[in-house]
Amino acid sequence: MTLEHIGIEGLSDIYIISNVKKEFEKAVDEIWKRNPPWKRYHGKMIQDLAVLQCQKEKAIDLECFEKIKDDIYSIRHPETRKNVRVLYTITDNGEVILLTVFLEKNDNDYNIAIKRAEYRLRWLNEG
Image (cartoon, rainbow, N blue to C red; front, side):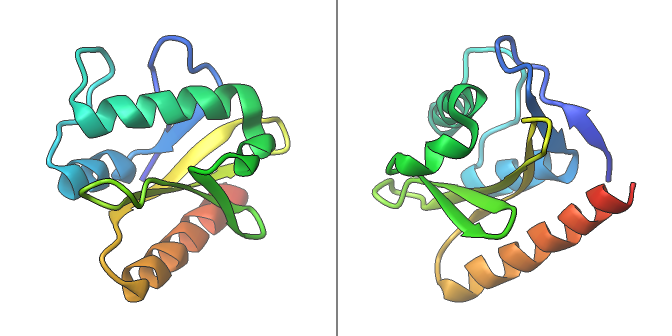
């Protein structure tokens, strides 16, 4: 597990834990790419990240963002065919770090993802 810059033009404050790429691919069946053209879910996620780039914590005032607990937030689109969730944190420096991506089918999926996000957040804070 490593922390890396997302590497997409215009998203200078967005970072990703390396495992998230594979989780994204598994959840939406789209390959993680740094450059367009992006498929449907990947393109929507890039749009959401652009909002986070500008809004940071204020994004939770928008329908697709919510605060889960303490330092963990969620990007959500429950009206889509696949209910893909992205859990992230925002550092004191204003950097957004994607912690995990999952396909929410039931409450247990959400609970497992939150535990994974908390573990990765501890890993970040210890490093």
